[in-house]
Length: 374
Ligand SMILES: Cc1cc2nc3c(=O)[nH]c(=O)nc-3n(C[C@H](O)[C@H](O)[C@H](O)COP(=O)(O)OP(=O)(O)OC[C@H]3O[C@@H](n4cnc5c(N)ncnc54)[C@H](O)[C@@H]3O)c2cc1C
Image (cartoon, rainbow, N blue to C red; front, top):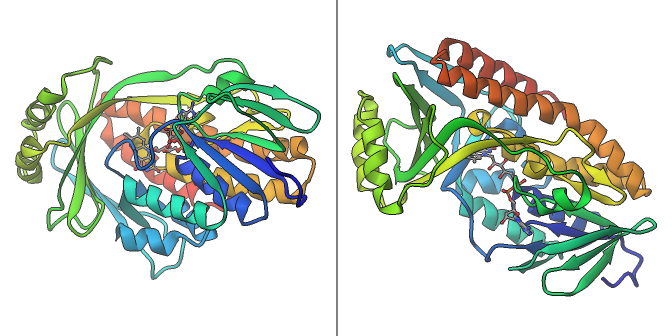
């Protein structure tokens, strides 16, 4: 990378939520940023996600919250119906102003489009179909060999390459990816008129719910408990998801018929990671799901990923010794991320024990905790 103008240089591995927000946060502070992404341009996994208050607050720090609200669906309330039909609701904290929604549902491709456009506008360069194969620490710099045979020597290397991070394995001991017995099914459906917030429904065996992601679209999720961690043929997914929805009644009957017609059903294991050894080595660091991947029950993994990018850039601004800045970054992030991962695992366990009367208050308390300043 050309250092001729004195700018500090960063190589970011992974153009997901953490990688793209870090690229913008660093580029706007004058860093020369290059991003390598193993996947193809425009490819995203899953249909949509919820940006809860902490996500919107962090996106606001990058000037992107309004765009995400405009591209998605603003909402404030989660309504939970337990297996006996008892309905409770929680209004999430409004973190970007009382007049703005507490959260937004958004299609993943839309979120990625917004994050990518901003990173490119700020001068970051993004290469698709490229990864890193070897990392060596030098004196105040990192030397990275890429899978196309080229080499980068940079002031900072950021591993933002998700739960199955290669950078994590290259800079530290292997981390355990834990499966907690749940598979999650998702399908894209037309937004039902009554779905103006997130709705969840607990059944005798599994949980389901609806998340609006635009005026016209929503996704349905179904969390299958005590499930085998296996792969089913794509052609069977809509029918099988419909079968799992069959024991639910009320509003789920309506969404079930949409799911059975859908050609967009996906099924994935719910897995978590928390790296309890160091997240950094010399001038390399892992962030986002690479360091701390929660199970999605708290809908807050993206919040942690975006916050990581902002906090990392702040610490690198504060201290030009990259190694020390990375230690300060990890100090600021570790406890918050660990609490969220552990809470998500506890909720997954309560769901499988059908103890929803305990999981809902735990979720609400954790949302309040996450609302505290970062
Ligand atoms: C089913 C499900 C539902 C969820 N719902 C929500 C939700 O509603 N709200 C929420 O906040 N969070 C949610 N999450 C969590 C959220 O998706 C993650 O926490 C978030 O995507 C983490 O961002 P990331 O950038 O760290 O990782 P990722 O989004 O996984 O991005 C990693 C990127 O790195 C790339 N990559 C991987 N390996 C390499 C490599 N070797 N070299 C180069 N590039 C590589 C990948 O292609 C990808 O682009 C959910 C997760 C799941 C599984």
